[in-house]
Length: 208
Image 1 (cartoon, rainbow, N blue to C red):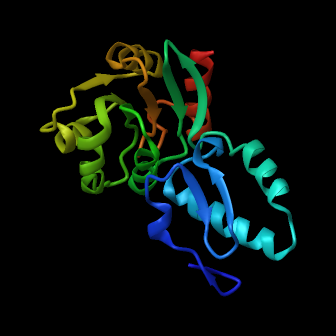
Image 2: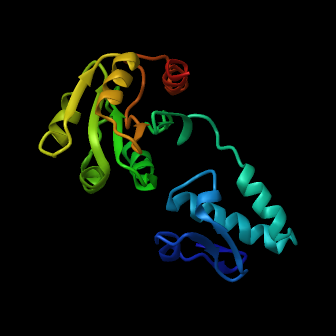
């Protein structure tokens, strides 16, 4: 993509470098200092940095803004770390594409809480990421048959639950030190919750 006629390299954003370096303007920041992760967010950050530099905003001001940025709730929202396990609320991820970006952003083994009202999902784009990153799959919904059919042949164990309380209990049993428990449902919430906000808020309330 381009910002003000300057191209942003997607290839550079997808690497494993310690730093996010924004081409053409010389700006650099450690990825660990960013409050949002994933190459899609690095792309958005790079575009914002290029625009800020064209407006004459200093590197120090840009860095301060990036370090203090707070994402909207229910979007890869880090809630709490318990026994060295991080719990992330991505309840807004009601489709496969959103879950793809969430799993792509994870750098630790994942216990994945998934499920709800299926929208006719094709889960195949997630197969490689699940094989690579997911330790266990916790289904949360009234009908988990499609998820079980899609992922049942993978090495990750699958457990069925019917409430957020049960889902978190199961996730805690499967998780290990330095893991992530990721609520990224890929489905609508209306079988058990009023909406995705209610689902995410319930996740946070139980944890806190």
